[in-house]
Length: 152
Image (cartoon, rainbow, N blue to C red; front, side, top):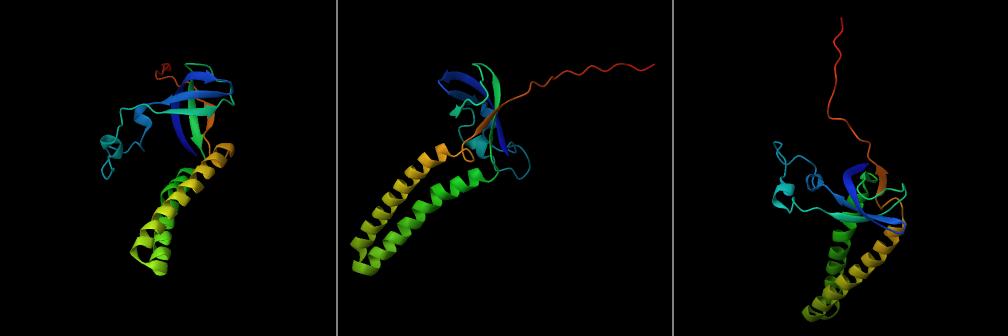
């Protein structure tokens, strides 16, 4: 499961608006050897907000944890980038084989639009599917102080 800490900032009917910690944007390996530093070069200081179903009756100001199923982010990314690209190439190839360059351009544009329509419909379905949308759970408070008792 992919996890991210967040804070509830508002409640709207059966949904809550949560805001993530800006340090939770990347994988956390920015300063590690071999890390890509994508969080460093991106807008890493920006807080991101998500509207999530309030299945735990969270209150405003409460710390929560957003969780998504393993592999769901990869599937969504591949679909969002791969499908339109594939349809652009197929549309251009079909147009080129039928009538030449002008039809190749038209086919590419038609393929892109068709891909975006499919993705829009897929987004609507994904929001209804609990395996794709984040599942929110309460984050347990962790004490940062430890007390040690001296044994005699």
